[in-house]
Image (cartoon, rainbow, N blue to C red; front, top):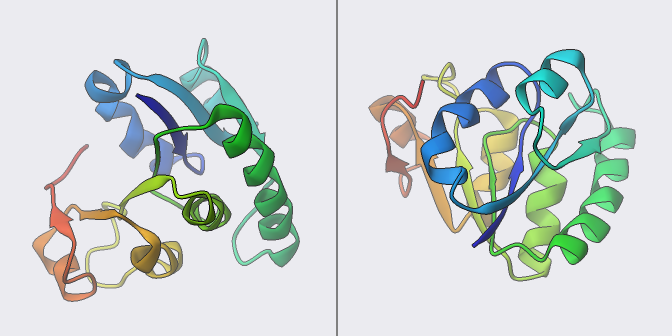
Amino acid sequence: MKIVLVSSAGGHLAQLLPLEPWWSKHERTWVSFKLPEVESALAGEKVVWAYFPTTRSIVNATRNFFLAWPTLLKVRPDLVISDGAGVSVPFFLVAKVLRIKTVYLECFDRVEMPTLSGRICYPMSDIFCVQWPQQLRSYPDAINLGPVL
């Protein structure tokens, strides 16, 4: 299976890294930000560098939308998986248009209030996962995986 893992830096990336026993078995491409800590964490991995900051930046959201098209067309993944943040939205939009399956993992630290990217990606997700039972109030059709960290 070919997968694309889309993640912001910091805690978002830290939540996808523990899933290595799963993602290491598949052909993969990462999408994240060209920052020293990301380069270190993803050393040896195939990475497409996204535009940042993405926090409510229409300019970078648009740039990442136009990055998502050639990336997903070139890679032709079976699955796009993300845990946010803003960079996930344009990749999920393009994935839906291209009929690529999507999985979203809501953030560990947003127990009571959903993230903006989670709220946007929820209706586009083939599978939406949460890490706390309380998150099911915002995402009633989600799967509660429990904490991945």
